[in-house]
Image (cartoon, rainbow, N blue to C red):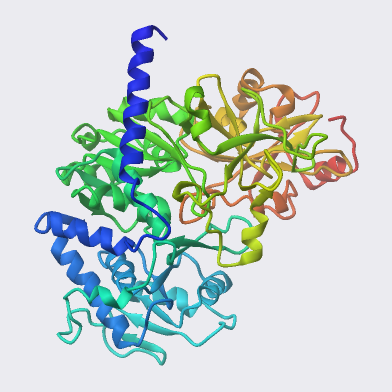
Length: 599
């Protein structure tokens, strides 16, 4: 990189960082300003501007605020007060953000429930929310009907689009009822509350075990929404396209804040559709969109459409955009700027890739390292423990070395860790005596590496990386290699046990698309990956099971392994001497388990 390019890069970085830090400069735990105050300030500034477009309906900032005020009036009529919690169980719709904003005007917290959950998982989330009232709609009542497990307390379901008679325990909530006032509630009704008080509960995805409820204080919600308003630098002329679920922080806070705190317009869709994506973006004149990386891969795998050349996106921001997708996505769809970021709902580690370097999740330049509270510490994949020195403190990872990312826990707004509703779960995420005796750090559970220029690269989740033939295998890196093979739509990589052999062997569950040929895959991976990293087993499946936020569910795949008696999909084994993947039969499976092959 020549001097001019280096100066331009540093200017982009410093400019983006300065905007972001300036936007959060006044946030403090003891401040009396709540997230609803931020929302009302935006309403007062952009009153008649269009705030939301949903399924053809348009809402100005004032109309959105009036809707929020009606939810506050409903809550007050039910006797709800500061410190209480209401559960919100709905898909993306116009009422979603006004519902939790309105409740926050009384100091009532909202538990954002994943509307894709059913049965025991849904019962669990409703029970741990602490709520006795649930705001919902007719679409979500089918999930409620699937609950068979007992709930922690009786629940009343308030249906905002009810028609006709409702069963016992369900009541209509007519938001157009004249008795539900559209005027703002008196701010005195939330007097005494501070930014450190809880505004929301946002649940983890539940890829392993039941979801946990992360406490989102007003301060944390402000950090999300204000920082992204600054980082994206959107303005009142921008329209942000959001297909991500609003019960999750990326869409519901980062995306919403970027649009509404800058006076822009949020163009909201119920859920992602690769088929309608570009027509929606073009027809609504969207200038930006918020992504989860998998969405970008879905779009790249779609056949070309005329609408993709008729749109004017200049910014895409989000997390999880894989390196092998990044450049193709940006080039094909002519998106001027990609803003990748890293963060977690409950954690205190966050970073931005302001430079737009493909594949990097963020950057902390060496000259600013002391100003940031994120560190990588050495990690033993086999024991799944951090590595400590003779002094009992953690060993910091060297440049280019893989380590677990940690965030220093402090009183500063940006380093604050609020944890989960479950105190024991919160404590498990804290690592002590890291750099000095008595310190405390948040464990991200993510393995990363940092290069000499300060760029961070995601490697794997702890537990996903496995050891085979004495080597650590990164599932993310293997997935990237397989994903670049022609015809692969999706690939999930994980380790499986083989009989009494040490370690875990690599296995890939592949969803094939047009042009996929298994016969050429082995030769391709031989060129792309070292021998220890190449998957020994292949599972061909029609679709990958994901969470509502497009995270892969690996638990069942790992449990089923490569047993043809448990799996209806085609299974293949890289059989020694054959130089090809061969179909796994019950007999071959038995041979593998008894150690018939030298692997």
